[in-house]
Image (cartoon, rainbow, N blue to C red; front, top):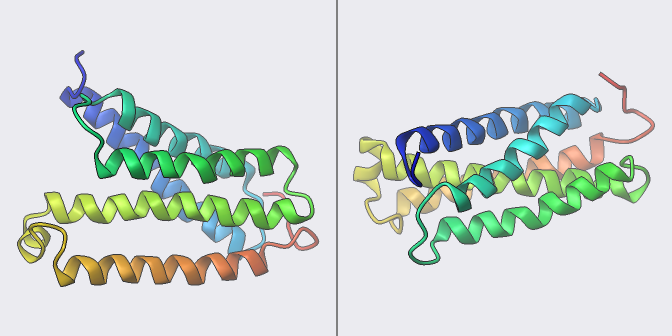
Amino acid sequence: MHLGSPTLTFLHVLISVIGLISGVVILYGFLAAKRLDGWNSTFLWSTILTSVTGFIFFPFHKITPGHIVGTISLVPLAIAVFARSRQMAGIWRAVYVVTAMMAFYLNTFVLVVQLFEKVPALHALAPTGTEQPFKIAQLCVLVIFFIATIAATFKFHPERVRPA
């Protein structure tokens, strides 16, 4: 298989979808004060692999917004992995929630970009990604994640956390 092949693209997209679905599940866990350790592990590894496969599966000619978002995403993911290694005790609980949600947001940000690029009806609304419909969609995603992250940080307390 060569870089950028349909098989590698499919694998990259599949890993990304697993990261997005597991992100929804861990957000539910945060809000319900459930650890969901297996789902958190799936989220972290699939989200890390999403960035890594984005770098290695596709030909590199110049730095793209995807490379920048992938690189930025690896920073909160590294912190989240470290916070998990600290058993999410004390301040590491909040650090984990915030950094995991940052990585989930960045994956969702890319999802919105891809939807506007690939779905004809959305692409017609914002062909360059600089038009108002695109900006409004991204702003809505940002606001939802901001509110969800605050709520998750307050609700996911160690004394209330129940292993699933």
